[in-house]
Every structure is written in structure tokens, then in C-alpha cells.
Image (cartoon, rainbow, N blue to C red; front, side):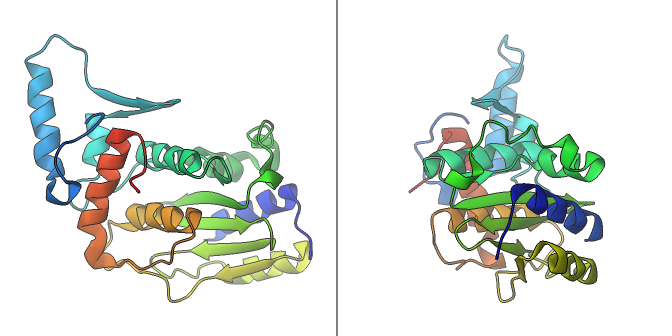
Length: 234
């Protein structure tokens, strides 16, 4: 069984088209994100500053970005990508998280449009690749296990669009695709991004996927705090 990076990127292109603040003294379980964002926004209105930002490496989050973690709001690219950066750092760069715009560029321009994105990254030194996929208004996740050359597809709505195209492609590039069954599923139309980040977190630290829709409020609060602290909680 063989899998080369260009073939993986081509596969992802087919799949895509077919388918605050540095630290808190309170426990995140009692955190009300809406209240926190409103409180900081009110404070900013009374102080002579341009605005509040959380910055980490090349990523910047505004209050509006952080507000996406409140209740049932949809997560945006900024939240997804900064959290992916935290995952890479927490795993000492043994996991590579592809920026969500990588997939969009791959769809728009093909392999030639993204081949420079990994020029400075030794993908074969990683044990796991995480590729967030954003189709229309839905987030899902593709992973590549480098040791077994296995591609897994995680979808919190168990979407199976484009499976025939994927099977056809697999017969050409000789690799395995698993659309995983029995994984945690969402019960609404707004938590797909949170599910993707929790898939990523659990997989990157080799923990079982033992969460459910009922855990989403607490997971949102934990992600909010981790982003503000610029590190994953133990």
C-alpha cells in the first residue's frame, strides 16, 4: 500500500468537491462566554484603545471571533485555525494541522495552488495530519495516519455525499479511506465546528472520542478559555 503527498492532495480535492485574555481565575465550567465578551467590550468602550485582540504566533482573534463560541454560534476560520496551532504546539509538532484555507485553495486551484504550503514542513516526520474541511456551512475533518497510510473521514452529521467518486479515486491511488461510523454526532445545525475541534484534540493526544452533543456547552467554554490562555488545558 502506498500513499504519496501529491496523491493525498488530489484525493482531498475530489473529496471536497464531492461532498480574555491571557488567563482566568475562575473555572471554565462556570464561564458565561456572552457575559465575558460583553464585559470586555464595555470595558474597551471606556478606554482609549483601538480594540481587544488575542494573538498567538500568526493568529489573531477579536472579541467577535471569540463570541462565536457562545451558545450555538457557528465557528469561523479564525477560531478553527488558532486552535489547530495550539494542537500542534501541544503535541510538539508531531501532528500537523492544515490551515482551513489550505482546503479552499486546493478546491479552487488544485495541487499547484497549495504545493508551496508544505514546502517548509516535513510531513513524513508527523504521525498524524489533520485537515479541516468546510463545505458550504458544514465543518468536517479528514485525517491521514502516516504510519498506516490510512485516510479517515470524520463527519458529525454522517454525511455520505460523493462516496462513489471517492471509491473510484481510491482504486487509482491505492490507499484506504474509512468514513468512520459510531463517532460522536451532533443533534443540531450549529455545533459541527466544535465537533471537529474536539475530534482533532482527542485524536492528537490519542484519547478516545468519548463526548456527545450534551457536552458541547462545556467544550465551547473550555475551547474559549484555551484560546484566551493560548494553550491547551491538561
